[in-house]
Image (cartoon, rainbow over all chains, first blue to last red; front, top):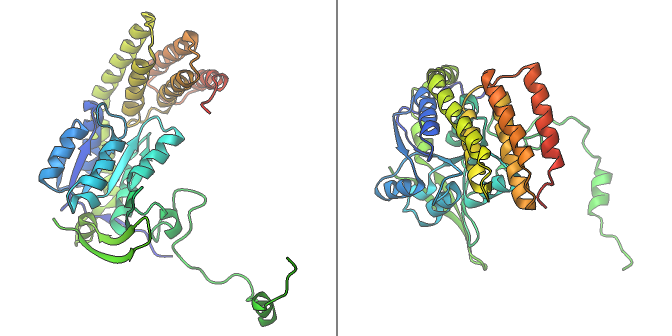
Length: 197
Length: 165
């Protein structure tokens, strides 16, 4: 199995942090500072983040879901549908406090790259960032959805990653563990057969 | 910063779906030579959080006191404000290693959310959460036998509250 990366390089990246809670914003800032990020921009509201992204692009956005006026979901919807290119392709990690299942689904459907539920540990957050840095997810533009391909579990986690759920498929194709089907069985599968309807 | 992009296919059937291969600037920046060990990055981030622990605990204490004062006033239509305070507790405690406090705050969010959806308000269910939050915070918010007992009680309260749908 391919080894998981043991280094992370964020020394050339700009991160945008969006959270209306000053304490949470500072704590998030402390975490990404430890990751060696070159530049971090902090916005106390989604509306300020919108204004900032109209002026300049960033490499990664970490946004809290629950905010007054414009919440994280509306912000990501705006980003994916109305922001100028290349800002609209920017990876987004949504951070969710009280994580009702409907909110997770809403985050996925508004175009977030990942939703990370609290409690938030630096280890989990960094793994998601490394994943975003390593994985090519196609970008979907449809009437009802704009954002990274939501069928991420079909691709499986990047090599070296254990995945997030028990149903995640592996990115590695292993050796065959059983005998091959014999040719007669294969022929039977392909043989046209008369059926009574 | 530019995102190299190319349209790889375009489905002209209705409704139109465009699928694009995008290499993000994050991917390009992270692929550059250099970097730091992941373990070292995580350790530095944890150290940064630890450096803010005391001031964060003070913020949480203030919020718990505000929560108790709010509930003591027995306001009419308290759902939105109560959920907002509980959400801040979840958000803030979610950064620190205080699992028992986090679970109690999360439980308060859940019970408020359920009672709002069911339009069945119960102040005793709220009060027991507020008391539990104060007690657990007084012990530092970590796991302990006493906190486990308190949390079991909160789970029973949530279980008795009808879930939405």
